[in-house]
Length: 275
Length: 275
Image (cartoon, rainbow over all chains, first blue to last red; front, side, top):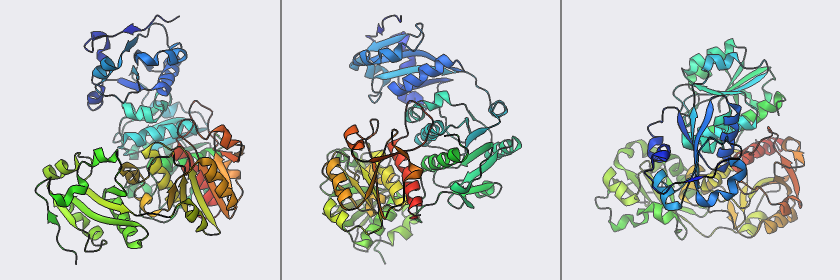
């Protein structure tokens, strides 16, 4: 039985320091700490915590009127994770903004396996989403949400991509960032080389792709590579790998990168009977 | 040859009243006026203006350092559309925010054909995206972007859906809202009845759908219906129409509504050889 929540009356209470001025601190990074927002993400955090693979909850902060509706989610956390509660005035003063829906958790991401280790641990039959130069946290979150929906085993990004542990990316991913293995390091060229060496059939997604995504042949190991918003994958990469396109009306602007990845992952997952 | 841009030195200049405090006015509506942001949307506005089907540009406001790069887009507007230019301080003081990327246009949407007229004018072979209860402007914009990519002839929404002419929805749609015919009126039940009476094979998208989207048979007229974020289509609607699902990993949260619509439209457009 979990202990009752601890009421916070003073926004400067040292016990809730981790929740102070969340919005500003988003921009400066938080040394392995992250913020989970909303009920759905809180549920995913509980699952990730229980799984014990490097994601841990440290504290939960709730608006007082949210407590009753969250009993089942709170019960999924170990009893030693403190749960704080505050009224709206104090809550907003702590967080520094009012878009939190009254549910925040502070979490920690421990040192995780790097790209080498992640690739080495992938099963003989696997699906990887590779991404380079993703700079928008909405798109990053969406990529993870889609990857989870279509059974991706790992998301591998180059170092120029933005951090999926950023609050908004976690929220848009509906918490998939907390449960899906990922690595973000090195260059796109290194990533490609490594995936090919590991026996992956690698497909770059591009409006100028040589083949329709529905024609991608099944393969035990398939990796889909998506590129930056706007520009798409650079020519140097497109010319070094096989490429696929999504059939669409000709026009000025192609699909959003997360949308394109979702459509392609759906196809590739069907082709490989993963869904 | 277009006249040179008119420099604005005073944020209170009456010539640029339409651009003042854009962000606050988003919330109150603007009597048929709308704001187009960014180069891509400006280009779409020029196309919509030239097409002369109810969308008209009224004025353009640019940050001084954007003028040079926009010559080709500006040339696509008639010479009688005034182009104003301001430095960053004045521009931000006018608009009331600084996320505009230095490219704003004020447009007007005249009285457009209602749903009856739109449906009556659809070709014998057509694809419709129907939506009910869409409350998020990002999702609304995404739905239009996808609809345009996959050759949808009209987007039909119930009155409870949010306004696609809202600034952010237009931006996320990369301007498709300005070129794709749409209507937003009445109830979902009325919309369904009307589409069925017009001979549309109507498919409701739902995680509990009876059939996989890849098994939807071709039909001269197909309409895809998507529901609210979170809840999805209500049971009363799902039980009255045929339903389709997107194969995915079982999990807590299904795909985002715009993502689901994109994946399903891609399939339905392929099935009906529209792309």
